[in-house]
Each structure stands twice: as C-alpha cells, then as structure tokens.
Length: 428
Ligand code: NAD
Image (cartoon, rainbow, N blue to C red; front, side):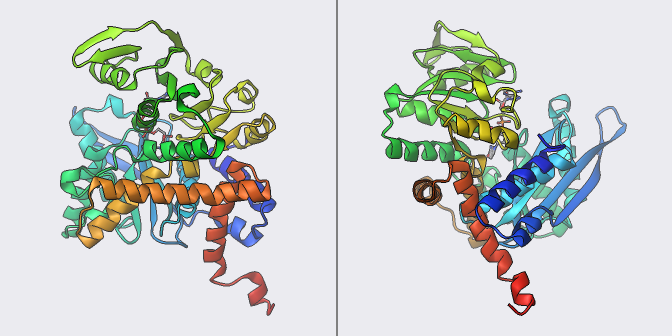
C-alpha cells in the first residue's frame, strides 16, 4: 500500500483511469484537491479548560457542482484520510449522476470521551470555524462515522445563527423536524441492498440459499442486513468493534439489533416483543469474519481492512463495500484473480449521498417528499448506475470496480474537458 490512504486512492484512480483511456489532464485534476481547510477547533471542556481539536474540510472537486460530503468525528481523522474520502465523494456523486462534487470533513477526537454538552460545543465550534468555507451552494456537509442527525441539527442551527438566515440546505442528514428527508436513515444500507437485488437478477441468486456476513453493525451495516434478511437471505454473521457472532442457520437481525441497542452487545437472539431467547451461536473476531465461507461479504465499518495480507483468504463470491475504502488498492488484483466480484464503495454506499441530495432538493424547493417517493427515486438512481457499470462489465470485459470508476470518470472527463482540452489550446 502507498504511504497514505490518499496516495492509495490516487494510485487506484490512476491505474483505472489509464486503463480505461481517461486523459492525463483529467487524472491530474482529480489527483489535486481544489481546497483544504485545516483549523484548530476550540472547545471549552466541562472542567473549564480550553481544548483544541484538529479539524479538516477538503473540497475535492467543484466541476460538476457544489461539493458534498460527511463530517467524521474519530481519533484517526487526519488530512490524508479526509482528502481520500473527499476524492471518493467526487467519484461517487459522478457514478450516480448527482450535480455535486466531492468533499469531506472531520475532527480528530474520540467522541465517546466527550460529555453531551462538550459534543454540542465541538459541533457548533466546527461550524464557526468553517462557516465561510461551507454553504448551500458551495459545500454541503452531512453525517459520517460517529456523527448523526442530532449533530447535523446543531450544525445547521449554528450556521443559521451566523448567517441570520434560515438555511436548512446547508447540511443534510438533519432530524426530520428540522428539514431532514424521510428515508435518509436507511438510505446507505438500502442503496447497497438495491445493488445486491440487481446482482440477484443478473446472476439468478436464490436468497434462501445465499449466505451473508456483515462487518460493522451501525447505520450502513444494520440496514443492509435487515433488508436482506427480510428478503430471505441468510445473514449468518455480523460484528461491531468488539467482535462478531456467527450462526449457520442465519441470525434474526431485528432481534440482534434490539439486543445491541438495549445491552450494547451482540448476541444471536430471537425476540417476540419484549420476550427474547438466546440462540446457539459462535463468536468470532473481525478478522475471522472477513474470511468466512459465505456468498456475500459486506465490510461496513472501517477502511483498509482487506489488504495483501488477508485478500487471499477471502472466500466470498461477492464483496459489497459499504465502508469507504475497505480494500487497499494493491489488494484489488488478488481479489480479481480469485474471481471475486467487488461492488465498490463509490456505488455500493452511494444511497446515502443520493438521499442527501433529495433532502437538499426538498429544502431548496420548500416541498417535502413522502417516503415512497424517496424510495422510488433512490431505486431508479441506484439501478441506473448499477446497469451502466454492468453494461461495461458485459460488453468491455471490465471488472465491476473498473467499470464503476469508468462511469464516474467519463462524466468527470466531460465536465473537465468542457473547459478545454490541451489539444484545443494547442490549436488541435
Ligand atoms: P456507524 O458509526 O453507524 O457504525 C459503525 C459500525 O462499525 C459500528 O457498529 C461499530 O461498532 C463498528 N466498528 C467500529 N470499529 C470497528 C472495527 N474495528 N471492526 C469492526 N467493526 C467496527 O457508521 P456507518 O454510518 O454505518 O458507517 C460505516 C462505514 O460506512 C464507514 O466507512 C462510512 O464512511 C461508510 N458510509 C456510511 C454512510 C452513511 O450514510 N452512514 C454513507 C457512505 C459510507
């Protein structure tokens, strides 16, 4: 793997760009983020002292529209990670044809160590530091790892206090009462689920005979597991940061989630109302979960969990990336040689930004959509993007990751080259 996650993201972009005939001008443009803001977010802690948290916002590329991307609160956040995530957002918005470029923000902080009031002060202070950089027609944040609707509501409120204008479109993923969209809560998991339904059609999968393992049981991981289980898929393993559980007959996902909410632990449990029974199951580590003999593996937690060290051990037939960047670029070739079909992050997790786009549209028009409209539109966007990539897989012999990148790079190339190509300026 390259030196940083951003270098790794650029290495993959360059490899696929060159292979699919993208111009060096376009690859060069996408290898250089448009703007990067680094601030020290000043927060008065409950004990009275002032703490400075490193905060970042990267606007990667503006060519297709204002930039869009989440804000992450995590101790590992740094400039390189934020830039890599912003680059993936540019590609992701292009894959699903949204009028946005990519951005990402983050604060290097352990949010679990903060009191609720410290968390609110941090969220508001981040927006004060970034208020001139973001905006509904400039750069629109959203939730990411360890940020949620409550935090988005605080951030919107702070922005409105600064600008003295009601401006809900400045941020998405807000509480419904404050202008959030119906259907945003499960959009990321649903987007991945819709990709799997397209695979089901294409490859004639039988849900009852198809096993699934999901790493990470948060917003993305839980909803995809729930939707697949509702369709009859056998979700045999799920995990959180503490480790995972495995049951060959399949897990009752809603009951496991209920248990996790109430007792903060994963257990194979079956609940009928409030009466729950534990079912026999094995426990396993997060590393063991990745190498389970299942049909579909869904990493939905952290980046860089599949590397050259463990890629050879992956047994799944399909790998559906809900996490951003779960596979390092140098592991791509190993997975390809093994014949594993990878639905890459920039398509598989694009449901979240798609419904965020719907939220922004609703805020700007002042008209609310019902849940069915949100779901129908999401379905259309995801299946169009899947089928455009699948056409390249079927007709050009590309693997799925390369095909999805090719869809994104074609749109970005059209935008970048509409301002002129080197040939044009050289009189060509
Ligand atoms: P979340 O905070 O809701 O859940 C994260 C889950 O990962 C939790 O269950 C946590 O326990 C688990 N986890 C943390 N450390 C782990 C570890 N070391 N091993 C295994 N599990 C671990 O986050 P989320 O919103 O579900 O996001 C998960 C991934 O999906 C991230 O990579 C995020 O960037 C990506 N993603 C999320 C969205 C979204 O809308 N939620 C959109 C696009 C991409």
